[in-house]
Image (tube, chains in turn red, purple):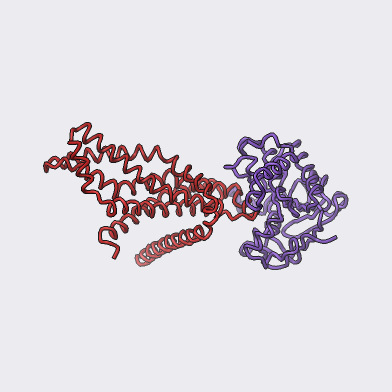
Length: 266
Length: 268
């Protein structure tokens, strides 16, 4: 009896693991399909620009406001801790490094997944449920090339821009709290930041991270929409899966990328 | 007359369940043909097989001279450029305006200038009486109008074969008559061949040249509208005259009723 329960539990864990691996494999295969069918998007950049507007520009408000708040909190917490060691002028360094290296790419990607990723999944899923994708197929137009690829590239291109804006807004928020409200020296705040932040090591690595997150979120969002069962319940489930899977993927990829970046790529 | 669609000994199923069994059909060029039957009888599956959306398990399916089972994706897309399809609820692209929906295929498949596309699109919309709504979005149209726009879109590239999936579903009597007349007029004006899948017998008998009756995955009867109206086959008679008594039972097959109501073993 006891062995049976243990075997059942092991079987269940194995089954779940297989399903997860299968899902990851299907997403990667779908990503390869998108890349193969991306020529149309690049021949007609208008299709991508339209998606950059929907995924990127329409996410601006939430990204900018969140960036401002995160930067302000970092300024407050940083000042509180650093003043114990008499180095409150370094608050600018703390805010900038935290944002450019980690918070900017990660938090903006999480926000992007919940705002734009879920919207992409719902849109493609509903297009499938209302036979719009079948209609396109019947018109001899490949939906992966015409619908999925532009949305994928729109997401990939928007992500680093949103992360940079998030970080810039966060630094401004940190400046407002630390310099304007608390009274940290303005010159020290900016000069220490300028001296400590390395363009290649910090800014470029942050951009690389956000590009990778952009690929992951956009691939997951388009895959979930395209594979969603064509019912209201199916689309709502796919939207939830996009947010959950993307968030986990962002955090796991962040760990991997950070480890590589800190240790060097060799 | 040359056949545009030829189907012989076609079998199709999902898993173990056979949906179509040994179907044979010949549809000559220029004809407007209806495939009639109750819901779930396999008629929409047949239409999807003709459009290459599904693959037959066995049998031969020729459309416009192409053997559908032997076509790869590119071949299928080449064939589909000669086809038009009207989906049950229109399936208009909700992110595009009425004008852009109708112009969609012209932009995707031709090198026509924008001014030429504009003129052709307005002509297509004029043919279905909706030139005046070209700037509206699909969400601003009624069900009948959306179906007419979808019809203009399906005929945008003057296809040689037009497939209609339940074109009358959910329409009021006036829209239903309008769509029926449009289907007939467009078929004749374009010199196309049209296949209509529907369970709306009265409207389809008014406009079609020939009828196939499908039941339980087989062709049960076929003929001209007059022959169908005069048919004495019990199923066809029941279907045409909408009778509740006949070979098609009211109840879906189920176990005896007693166990469901806790009456097992009781006798009155």
